Image 1: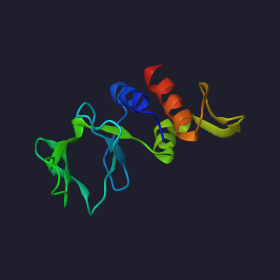
Image 2: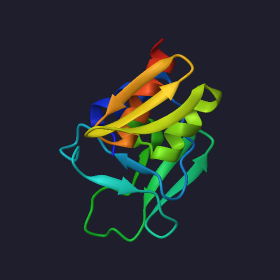
Image 3: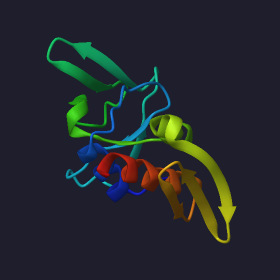
Length: 128
């Protein structure tokens, strides 16, 4: 999984997220940074309202949190989502020693796991 720091940088760099089932996210700055949530049609759903998208928590009566605006959460993209963000820039993924290297048309990045290597490659692309 990518780090929260990488996820924050991706958001700041403009990585676009259209929430869907299976997507992971965190709710930062509310003493919940270590809790990873997953969008699910059963417990966490995305609702479209005129003012924007709202992520609703269903069936969580023990919580005071019923919903939160998408802009207030940090998306933790999965490997295939990061690869999609790279688009035509992606060349290959290779096992490299203790981790992985992502090769793009613009260079290469390495990380301890594939998702972190992909995240750094996307950041290189977005941050130029």
